[in-house]
Structures are given as structure tokens and as C-alpha cells.
Figure 1 (cartoon, rainbow over the protein chains, first blue to last red):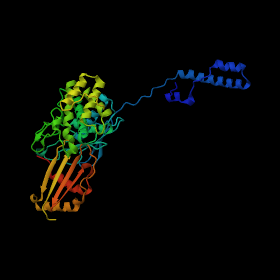
Figure 2 (cartoon, one colour):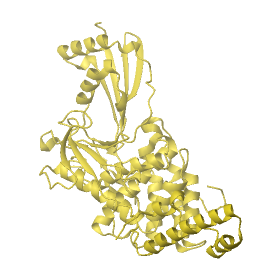
Figure 3 (cartoon, rainbow over the protein chains, first blue to last red):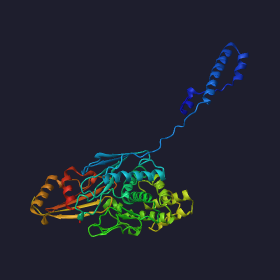
Figure 4 (cartoon, one colour):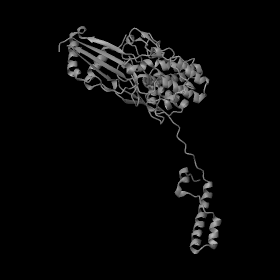
Length: 368
Length: 103
């Protein structure tokens, strides 16, 4: 059995389709000039050879070339408690647990995030082209932070270098929604490119919280009503008066601690924080679109990643731009809900309600 | 330089968005620490740094602002964690440790 690619089939030099029918060539052979008879004979001979090949090709199977199934490519590095990126490779895709919680949490969390994006939204990694998922853990000493550096995730150990009674923060790999949050910054970088300042920056932050929360909800198999909607729930030690870094359900209530202060997030436009600090308050004002998503997801019901998450993902992938503000984001998500589920649908009304409850009206015919 | 000085250290941003805003007053420090800081300010040429290093904001990175008042002079320098001026790395390290939040 001969295997040929479809490319061979359609290449012009191998074309085996003829125009002049044999009966016409035979007429020329009988009644044409010598020159015409020679040419007709040549054409008939070649035609017979082609027909022979065609007959042979009928018996040949052409395997369909399939695109390889997307797979995860995770790499975890150890920074040796120095502020370096990337560090020493400590775990590769497919390798078993290392025994170091930070390494294994970074590995697993990246995998869960990849799973959400691929299984639910059909997205192949951060760039939708199978980008490797790189994580550096044990970054710095006493580094109470995690970030996306444009190419990879970086995680600090919080206060794990201090005696326990002095600690405020645990390591930043401990909360899977933090991992999902950081990876989503990467997706935003490739898609909407929301500028990291002011309202577009707050949207950048909010979309990271949304999808970080959906990663966690999916692992726990929680519906919107079962989810706690807390971001970074396990990051604080018992020395902190607080349950999480942020609350999407009730912005401003996640913590109230004598050392850390009070959760500064607003949950409504009337409390919008005008500041130059924190790139125009991107971590403050993200509370407003966070709550809009929470309300929308609960209005729709069921698993939040299925419909509300789908609307938000399509907005991030297809419609949001670098300078999109809250009003535009509301209009875009309202429009997408109508396209996906129908004008006046339960889903579209849920989007409208979510934004309305944070002080933003939508439902107009503004172009997105 | 034996003048009284203050250093205000502000940190914003980061995943948690929890800021730090602390002022170190030389009058409240031990002599050894004051001398060390004076040397650090002088050797870094802090007052010749541009006020704001052009920085593209990076998601969840820290931003820093250092304000030093000494002998009637005041200067402010701002930068991102991603673009710490080489001459200020030692000072930044000291300030981060000095103002670290802990129980």
C-alpha cells in the first residue's frame, strides 16, 4: 500500500486530470494531418498511462494529517533565595513530586490553570501556541509577592524565613488562584494587552482574579453559589486578622489588621479610588469589576466557568483593547452575552445586573 | 555630612497591593546606623538621580519611592522593582529590611 500526502495529490506537476477526451483524439488520429496524428497519438499514450495511475491511486489510502494534541510543558526553577530569574531547573514536565512544597505547588497550579484554559476554552497555553509554563520559586528572602515578568511566573516565600510568631505571609505558591492570576496576566499580554494603569489596569487585575478564582472553583468542583470568591485565601498566617487578600463577593472585607491595614478595595463606582499610587490603584479598583463578575456568575448559576467565564474569556481574547475602561468592558461583555445566548437572555440580563450593581449601566447599542 | 536627615520609604503594587509607607529619622537611630546611612546616601549620589526612572509598569511588581530630606534639601526618586538603579541597590535592600512588616 502506497501512502501519499494530500500535497502530492494537488501539486500541479503531478496532476493526472486531462481535458481532451480520448474519442476526440481518435478522430484526429483517423482524419488529421501527419503532424496532428503524431500529436494525438502521443496524447493518447500519455492519457492511457495517466488512467493507469489513476486506477492505481484509487486503491491508495491517504492518511489525514492530524494536528498533535496540545500538551503541557511545565518547568520549575529554584532561585536559591536570591532575586534571580530563572534559577536552577528542579522539576520538568512529567517528573514526579520533588517534596518541596513550593516547587510542587507551582508545578501543579500551572497544570490546573492550563487545564482550565484548554478544557473549557480550547486555549493551548498562555500564547495559544503551546508556550512553556515557566515558574521560579524561592525568589529572594522574605519576598512577600508573586508576579508575571512577561515570560514566566515568579514566587516568593513570604515570611517563611522568620520565626513563626513573626510571620504574616506564607509562600505565594500556596494558593492556586494566585498561580492562575499570574498566568492570566500572560494571557492578557498576548490578547487584550490592557495597559497596566488606571481603569484598564484594574481590568487587567480583575481578569486575573476572575480566572484565578475559576481555576480554584473548578478544582473544588464548586458552583458559583458554593465558591467562596476569596483570592489568596491561604496566604495569611494566623497572625493576621484576615481571611484572604481580596474578596470578589465583598470587596473591602478580606482583611482588617493592625499591621497590614484594612482591605482598601471598593465594590462600587461611588467609592472609586483616585490615586497615583499602585499604578493608579489597579489593585484597589479591580474590586469593582470583580464584584460585577461575581454577581453575573451567581445570577446565571451553575459553574461560573461555563457561561460567565466564557463571556469574560471572549471579551479578553477578542474585544478588549489596551485602553478599555470599565464602561467599555461592561458594554463588551453585555454584547457578547447577547451574541452567545440571545438578546434579552438570562445570561445577558445577568451581565447587565452585575455591572449595574457596581454602578455601571450597560445595555446600550454602543459599538465595542 | 552630619546633618539631621529623614528618609521616607514608600512601596506600592505587588500582588496583594499592600503598601508600605515609613519614615526613618536619623535622630531616632543609633550613631553607628546613622553613620552607615549617611555614607550610603553620599556614596550613592542620591541627589543626582533623576526623579523618576521611566518605567513600564509590570503586573504585580513592586514600585518604590524614596524621599530624602537633609540640610534643607529634598529629593525624590521613584522606580520599579524591575528597574532598580544600580547605585541604589544597597539602600533599597536596607530600607526593605528596615521597614519589613512583621508581627
